Length: 357
View (cartoon, one colour):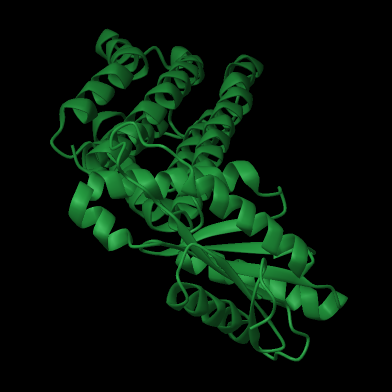
């Protein structure tokens, strides 16, 4: 079933509850207004059908329809039409009529906004017209105490129920929005931030470092000869390697560090408030652990990492310059033998275990 069908069924389920309650309370209200008028037996029967059976018929009609969403909108227009019909049948008794029309108007606004309120009003007017043709036109100017008390449950309980349903819907939509936002910022394979989301965090960290005059580091991580891994062992093996690296990043980084998948076999890490020598030690420990991993699926598979590291430079005017330093360090690591960490100080590459080049 498509998105429209699922949305329609969800709407039908919500309205099934509110319609069942609302029409049951409405039957009490309308019945109290109709009783002094001594209506014919068929009118009582029609009231019972409308107040008791119609909610179940409407739900089944929507549930079995090809497009449940459209069917439920038709059901709501039927509700509006019948509401107008009973207003005429009650001879426009003030309180029962106002309660009936206002509760339906509230329901229409909650479902479809101003546009559906107007469409529902037209249906109510048509219902009033048919009611005037069926019943002798008259106007009951007063509402008795019994009729007033009969209307109170509809006026108090139905708005509460509709408000609760709207609250649940708003809560569900809010949760789904947060989930979609998280998905839009997450790499599906590794569970880390994707390229765009990590770049956003880089900009935030760069602004923080400038504002607070505090340092930090960023690392770009590349899996050595990853194309060869895919070509030799298959893309499934390559995906396992990518997930393993992301798992190690999640397990070994600090809570304040931010890891992402920059693209392909390249990963990126923000290391806030971490001195460059400490960042280099952390990245070299990661490189060492990753190189000693064993893969049960492919025991012959050997992997290593090249890592470029750059500290925050207060002279930089843009976060991309900071990232460029890390990128140049990574390039140096890949072109000088791979499986190493290179960091840059004052625009010059250094190896954490060697003297400055």
